[in-house]
Image (cartoon, rainbow, N blue to C red; front, side, top):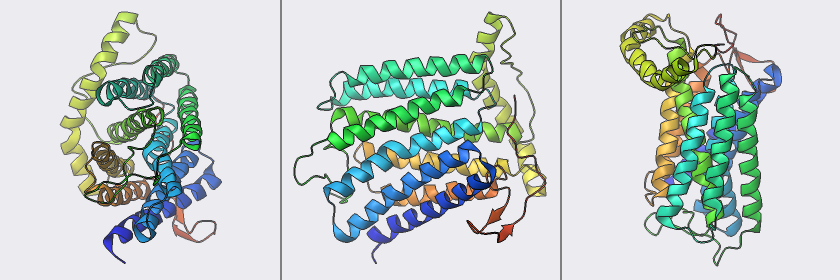
Length: 351
């Protein structure tokens, strides 16, 4: 078996195992984010499986469409949505809303730059939808309503359904797929603009949510010094709230950086919350996945398969370390426990 088959095959197998393990945890704990993450990793595994099958037997239209839909469109969006539900009791909704706005803006700019055929007015419509949902999520977060992840879910599910409809109705010219001539890996150039523009809309939202959510969780649970104070309490005067909202990214960044020595000392001594190393691994894995997807989008596919393998290994390692998802590890659908529950608080922060 050559590397062009082995790497995506291994990536697919790991993603399926990951999905199965998280789904099994959902069966026992019924946390929505676990089911959503399980679906996201299932999509990841299907997309990589398509790459492995195609490397072994050649591409066809069915594999090409399935690869693009599950990998290029759905995976990041659903993993990011899982993070939204994990952090639904926090003010992370502001970050998700901002990520969604940026995704809509980038979608609009992408169409202006590349002029995808068949896009019509979809770019401006997607941008408007992103603004509407971002505002709704921001308002729900402001009033401390834990319903904001539900609003995010409406957006992700709606965009996913739309992409499925567009994929089913898409008519591709022969041979039904497009490959990078240098590497032989697939590229999305045959799809209509209405479908291609859903890729940045979901990918940027999901990737930002996954990575920034991991970093936010690291910040929440690491030992830290608060050099800069801020408050997102909605009961404060409006002008103070807006000021605190604007400075909060700066304050969190500064507090995060100055707290690294304390966190490193706690890590070495073994007195750090498991979610700190866990979420750092998840953040790096999310960056790796987003990076190779971005390179693929701009026509550079050399590191695509290896980058996806590295990403799934880091993500899986991060989730295995965390008690948030794996408060115990057992062989899925059995009572055989490989690790028992650790004595850490597993609920997310409430503020």
